[in-house]
Length: 288
Ligand SMILES: C[C@@](CO)(OP(=O)(O)O)[C@H](O)COP(=O)(O)OP(=O)(O)OC[C@H]1O[C@@H](n2ccc(N)nc2=O)[C@H](O)[C@@H]1O
Ligand SMILES: Nc1ncnc2c1ncn2[C@@H]1O[C@H](COP(=O)(O)OP(=O)(O)O)[C@@H](O)[C@H]1O
Image 1 (cartoon, rainbow, N blue to C red):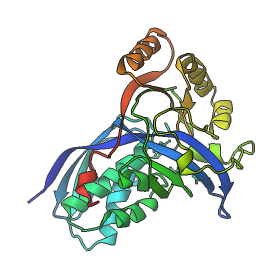
Image 2 (cartoon, rainbow, N blue to C red; image 1 turned 180 degrees about the vertical axis):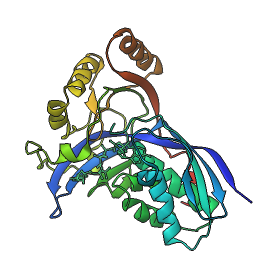
Image 3 (cartoon, rainbow, N blue to C red; image 1 turned 135 degrees about the horizontal axis):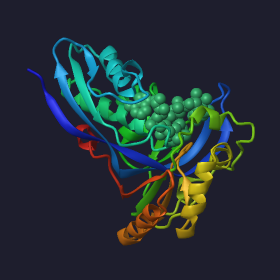
């Protein structure tokens, strides 16, 4: 009989800062970043199948079923385990693609966590994180399941206490392709490494996003959104863009900024607010 688990969140992340500290021999960049989970994201629905087929039952614009990270995550877990089961997976896609919010990676992580549970494939958190890394550098963080200081390409993770905040996020209406940002000749790759203990637990605004200079030059709408949001605080870009964010300690401050975004009217922006969360909502499906 089919086992079903509906309303499984795939939360967004913000990179509170992102420093590029070097480059590996294979061209991948060494980073230091603070990953922050938000109470806003995609929502996935799972139902097991006895015939072993993996199907995405929702159309997602611009992402063919076979290349969807959800389908790839399910196939990977199937291949690495001895399960004969398959799954139907539906998604309410809320996060923009190429937004720097980790949407695809979070979808993949939720898929690995939920199917590992429904299929009873028995991988522990560390094993699932290793599988996830094959799908993308941000996937292990979502399986790690708590706010983190990350190094390497994002896979070396340590728990990080972050300020409790409300974030206003603006989607500036462009997608910033990660590869184009990292390969830009003007990207600085030599920020001096920081230590996890340098990160302040109770205040915002630590460090910077080294990808922002390149992204704002390549995509002027990102620069415009940052300039506008800066009237209210230390606005910065998340990941390789395109979304920008600003932190507020009170919900009503964030709400006022949201209303101000909306009253700008004609701009091609979408904006929302979200609260910081400490744990991934599905963290209890995995052991400690
Ligand atoms: C920048 C970050 C920060 O959290 O997030 P996003 O903005 O994408 O959400 C991540 O490191 C994104 O990692 P990931 O999601 O795996 O990137 P991919 O799309 O696979 O990378 C596309 C390309 O960007 C380059 N790339 C990516 C990551 C990295 N540390 N160094 C790189 O040089 C590589 O050329 C790679 O082929
Ligand atoms: N389920 C998915 N959701 C979003 N993007 C996906 C998904 N599966 C594959 N992708 C591909 O991954 C790319 C990066 O998407 P996403 O993770 O949302 O952005 P970012 O890495 O900037 O946060 C998309 O442009 C898309 O082509």
